[in-house]
Image (cartoon, rainbow, N blue to C red; front, side):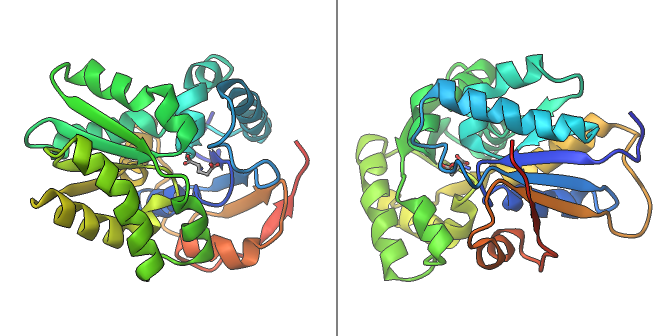
Length: 269
Ligand code: DGL
């Protein structure tokens, strides 16, 4: 592998473009290949076996394009398929859970951490495992918030519907874990709702709640994994996007990437 090879990123859909956004900021000279498995999204409601099976085919697609590093932007895939993906890859594989866990531990003052994500992420217990492996005294409360994914896709991220949905979920979290001082956005889509989540969380907790996500931490982990080998050229790296279905992508993708996009090539895995 040389510096010139691209970095591969995959997600169940377009939400993983929040990770690409952070990656392009941290490593602007790198070429990136992004794959969104939009024909099979959502992964969050599926069983661990199915998520693992789908994730392996996504990774295979990227490896066939000679990527030097794989980033699993999808929290559900990271939580359910990381060991299988690492075993199947000759290049380093970075998931979303470990960097997210590290960001949470860096932010918490009291060791009381909340994590919100899809049903499959919460059921996997992956965040608790990653956090407690690093700090056995940390206390974690995890809550599935499945409605927040369609809200983010619809672009309803700042209105009263977003506020009501966040309040309804977070009420459960703070009723059961009132000392939570740090909340992990354990899903690709939730950074779009960050402002509402942060406001409602602090209001319900009656103390300041730090909100962290894995996107920035994953980009930093990618930088570290490349060591002295990142592409340092001055012009911006290429971004090539592929998807297994192209419906609504023109509308959805820029929302997550935060910049215009030249389009997706349709692929069959
Ligand atoms: N990408 C998924 C995640 O981060 C959310 C969408 C889905 O359920 O596939 O967990």
